[in-house]
Image 1 (cartoon, rainbow over the protein chains, first blue to last red):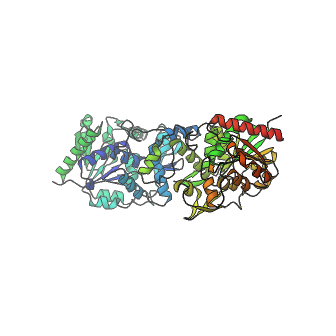
Image 2: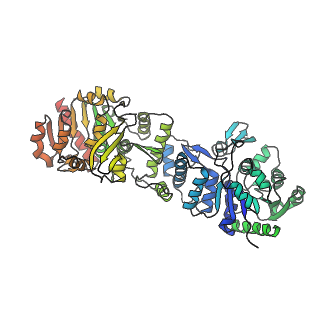
Image 3: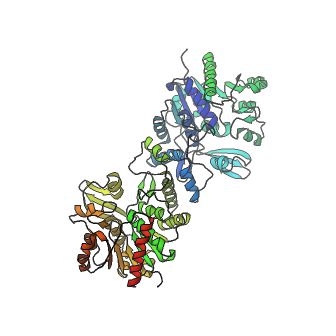
Length: 312
Length: 312
């Protein structure tokens, strides 16, 4: 059977890792990755798209394998000097990463939409699959916390996700449009995959863009849990569930995606949850969903593609 | 006798070197350096002030001793990546130098005048003498050439000063104002020193700002020739004289500054020109004006201060 056409919704390190696996096992023209841009922000006059960069760096094999974000073999000479000159140091900017932000900022000031800039970057970095920002419009994720409303990067990086969360807002999303190609890619795909990204701040912003959720709804949707046991593999998703009064688990993620997701992949560790997730109307699959290295990513993506083919 | 209060007009590497010497031999509050900003330009979205940076880096002992411009122990990781991403490569941007431009750009976008930004930089870099841009207004040196009018950096760096020069224009200078402190520093100084900088594109722009030349005229003016024999120590000054139909020499420089400069320092090599320069109404001094290293700079500056004291 031919490879399925897949659209993956992604954000953050977990999203980057699974899409890297999918890129390993699918032909390039069978994969479109739609990336959260709600975390994008302007810092030191530079326009920064953390999730797009993480996905691109990972797929181009430029990412720092230890952190998951930033670049490998990175140096910090400009950043050290910026700090010496009194600039804020809470968002780390490596020398080559800085170049990425500088080029993005130049292009934006020249009027290029983010989708075109991203396409250009993918060309320079030899990325063959299609990577699209969710929108070319500015959408800003705000985190409501017990210390006030914080822009996402301020909450996540500056405050290290410490303030207690009580809600989210995606500023600008109501009037936003999907980036060119997003709806077209979803319309022609066989399956939408929701990556093991943070449901609240990586996937929900994408689905909040008018017309995207409707387009996704017309297709079978596969999701991979970002939670194993009661812990997130990476990032504050489990902490957010807790603070919102929900026991964090793969079941809680499934409940979050109820009526949207048809097929749900959870970790062997969570075998016991299969029955409860099935009750939500999902078909549940159990495997080793933890991605330690590049091989793990390809292995998990391969298993998913096999499941997808078996369901086609 | 007490140290004289000195104002130095400077631009480029020659200016940076002599002002470094003056900073070695004078108490910090006895030296104000007024720097050409006609070469300033915007590149890759960054506001760059090459002459200010060269003077500041040199005085802070941060300059690359081989080139005279840029920083020592510099790395080029961001620049290499910028090039890979299709950005123009004719203006080299080291990693720490890039941080300087980034901070300058941020501050300008925040509304800081260049003079305040420069003061801030001097504080970070431990520079104790006063360094002032000639103006906080945008003044743009254009070089008229046989290949059309070129912005200075385009002529000097991108085209490597190859096109034949037939004139100059300092766009915006008529309506410009001296930076805060410039006229005050000149008014209270004992002597103005014109550094061995390019007369056409480093010193003339400063003197073209309304009120600066009048203020300078009220004081004894010492100049050091940027030409030895018929060659510039560094940069295109001699080539410019030739292309403008003037035989390049210390005498040609003296003629350029006639009715402004009272005391003129030339190299031992040009001993033969003393009589002709004296005829222009200048008092001429002959010494070794070539500055190979930091010690040379202090030695030449010390000789100048001795001459100044003897004339006070």
